[in-house]
Amino acid sequence: MKTINIFFICCALVLLNSCSQTSNDYIEISKNDYKNQLHGFWLGQCIANWTGLITEMDKIGFDTANTSSEFYTSENWGTQDLPNLWGSNNHSQNIDFIYAERDSLWGADDDTDIEYIYQELLLANKTPTLSGEQIKNGWLKHIKAEEENYLWVSNQTAFDLMGEGVVPPMTSDPELNSNFNMIDAQLTTEIFGFYAPGYPEIAVDLAHLPIRTTAREEAAEISEFYVRLYALGAVPSDQSPKDRIFGMAEEARAKMDDSGYPAKMYDFVKSNYHEGKTWEQTRDELHLKYQINQEDNYKMATTDTICQGCFAAGINFGAGMISYFYGEGNFKETVKIGALCGWDSDNPTATWGGLLGFMYGAEQLSADFGVDFSNQFNIHRTRQGFKNNGIDTFENMADKGVQIVEMVNTNFQLYEEQDEKWLLPKEK
Image (cartoon, rainbow, N blue to C red; front, side, top):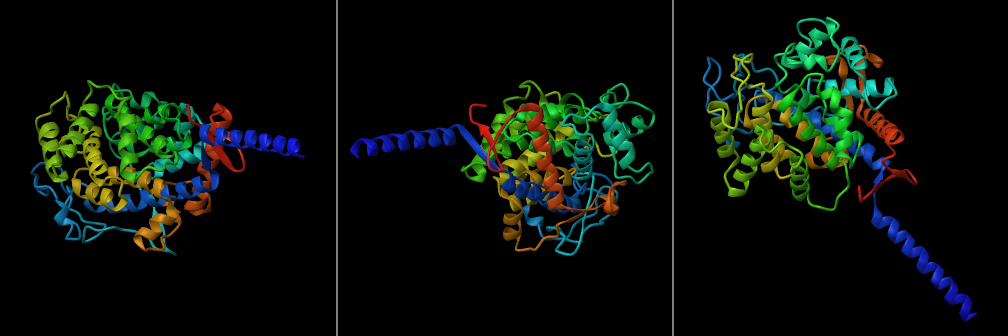
């Protein structure tokens, strides 16, 4: 009897060791949790996008007929919104969070609708890597060919070129598209990071052609930085939000060209943060260093003379890094700073709202705001040609995202699967 007991004890120890080894070798990603987090991505992106729209182009750093060079500060939160570059004030009389409550609709905007198109195209074409023809056909089908079609700068130029038969990536060729260095790809491709959780370089490969539909050079590098952040943020972690976002940023920064202005902007903002300067001081110094003095070979776009480069990829990346670092992983604080920072303020807010919304998840966002948010999304506010007259739900959109991760895994064999979980090998 003692021999039998010892035998079973030894077997149990071997089994426990095997289970422990499996647990230590893999990071488990629950598919159900991932779906909730993708719901949080769409919700967080919408909250941040619409909040940032209030202050979009209010403060661009130069004196014009409608705009003061004096930027907003933290004290402006909750106060009256001032007219933007074009003299309008469309979304709210006060600078505060905007959100759609239950039984209402979130409207699509240019920070959410192209990503929605790409997700639909991936599923419709049954491929994680879209071709230039697939992108062109998708854009022409789902984007309105009229003056008010919610496209600007490089997106609009690329769309016009597609109408002439030009196929990506030639739609961002500097010889054809003088807006190739604008912000556009930053706000249309981050989602590809969530399709390859834990594999930032795979995610960058998936996003390669969508990015180069509208961007080249530094604008493309900045977009890849965001995609990497999303892929890194998609991995579960026990770290605090602040430690996570700082660690993720450093890993993504390591892939940047040290000699380029995006890397130098990143280092400048990070250095100011660690020196204890306020975000307002850093924003003002960023404006002087890059927009005024054009240091580190930063050149304002000659085609964007109306607002002196305020749609450019660079200045908005710098502003984005200010809200990213000074927000310290806190959703509300990050969006507040992003909305007040200046320039094209709905774009960085939407990017970080999507990332942090994913990391927190939809349920946590609702709890933090104390709001029963709407889960319905109207893609036809800005785009066309989708089912159900353009009305979708975040749950359905999140489920489609999970399907794409499954498709990516089928193609690249990134994860082992077990009981509705993806097992991410730690050594990779």
